Image (cartoon, rainbow, N blue to C red):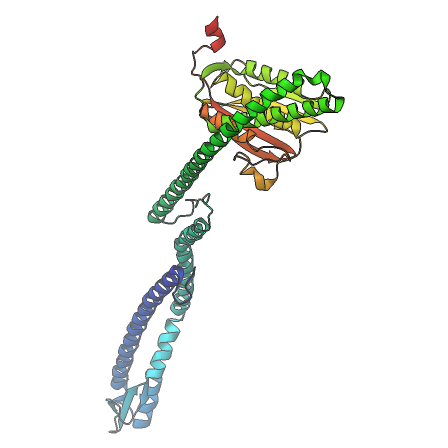
Length: 424
């Protein structure tokens, strides 16, 4: 925050440069006036000497008139130090008319004074421009620091516009510091998330195991009752079917908890992406209502090999496809696409269903965050975990009525064969 009691750097620079310019211009002008004044005084004495030669042979009144004409910068003065004598013995005391001398100096140096004032104004304007060019990058650094202090770690100060190399080096050092601070904040967030997930995983794993044992006993007793269902009333049979479905749902939830909680290395293989997308297409056709979901695939290179765990990659795609279909109960468009990005392969699943609320976009991959009324909030958390276990990452983007999940995985080195070729 700016301190009103202290001047800014720009004000100090303007003051220093202005004083320097005024001082130099004033000194040069004073020196020129001094030289011109001395020159005029010398000229006045020369005029007096010439007048003295002429008036020596004239009468007093004639000598006085000649003195006034020949020496305009000299006036009769009783205490004058210059004495002229006429032919008839008259004495004329003269003194230098300094007012006339100064007027003559000013008149002779009028053009110089005008150009001096113009040069002074131009110099002041240049001082303002110079101060602005030096201080503007500093002000930008100050604004950027305030933005970082408020939590905006994406800020970057452009190097263009730095007037001197020191300012350019300062801006470059600041940008490097901002990048390192951003990386540190991201690493800190990841460490915090990992700690939170580890603690949550331990708790979830314990709770899931505690639920799993009585749930298994309930399943056994339910199966015994199901064997006797024919002897039960129709209403009891319906209740048993409902109870069986609910136990299956609880079992699925517990399995999701355990899958989220326990680490699983799996196996990384070289998979042709075309076969993976073909499998995903078949899953869409089996899951989506006929004629309601319009499917589109855009595979850049079907033979491109990607390093992934077959089971994990299928589970990830199945979860994203199911979410996309659930988001379009009234129909829509589902697009699966791939794109090679350097040494990585991007796999995308886009849908035109209900968009994810903006306040949930940044938290959608966190555990227990869900947009479904009856969802557990573990589906996308498990997806993120599985993708990271394969050495990849997943991101979400929304806009123009499209929700897009993008998975990025490593491509297999050139010359390697797929797992299917090795099997044959």
